[in-house]
Length: 187
Figure 1 (cartoon, rainbow, N blue to C red):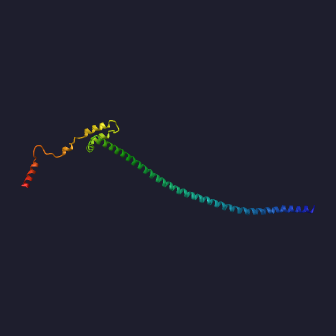
Figure 2 (cartoon, rainbow, N blue to C red):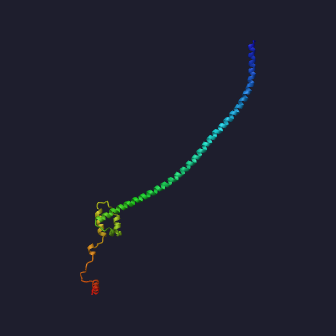
Figure 3 (cartoon, rainbow, N blue to C red):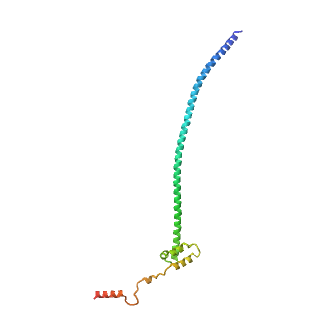
């Protein structure tokens, strides 16, 4: 055996015995580093879980806030729907009143054009009931209205007959008394 071969066999023996010793040392180092790695991983995992927990809490707060906003919007929507319904009913009522006013205006204008006394005719309930059922868009509405005016109008004395005229029977009792009074004053 040469010297070189002897060194080699000694080196191999040392290596074999050293590998056994170094294996236990490597296990110790590995166990120390693995416990350090475990602690680091544990802290990293805790930090990661805290991050997700914070995100979840923030998301929960956001959900609560948005749910509150949604509830208030639903309340506002309900109030707005009530307001819309109220406005719709007011609009339909105003539209019907406007239609009635237009019909009344048209009727009044036609009665005046046909020579009827508007005040006298509208004081008559029978005339008002008859006119309510009259369709002003019919072709014969004017002739029907003329007939109703003639039927419900009472003859009115012309304006000239309402002026004072001296009776044709001579002097009235009042006139006679007036003449005596003026005669006494003057004499």
